[in-house]
Length: 118
Image (cartoon, rainbow, N blue to C red; front, side):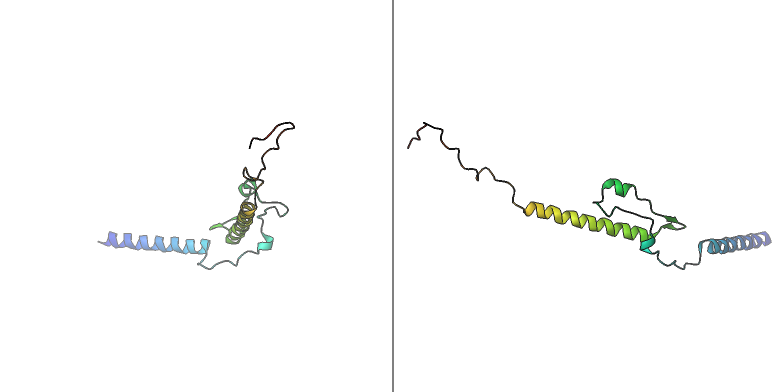
């Protein structure tokens, strides 16, 4: 019975030490202030439309608990804006009348010397 009590006490002490070590290494749940978007290392071209290769080439900073949320949010906002611009351009192109259709083309004029039958 005494060995069981020592075992339980040992497990509690080791568990407490692991919890304390983890708390010190990983923090106590406080959040870090958001990163300044103007200082983000994530860059997309500003002088031309964003392409798929641009998006594939983006590398977001990794922190102890994952990616930097502000960089991910910034990137998603840029992609959403680009998609909206392309959707508006596609809608405008679909509304624009296309060239003359087959009903809009006048019939060919009769050749010289040809008589039209009534």
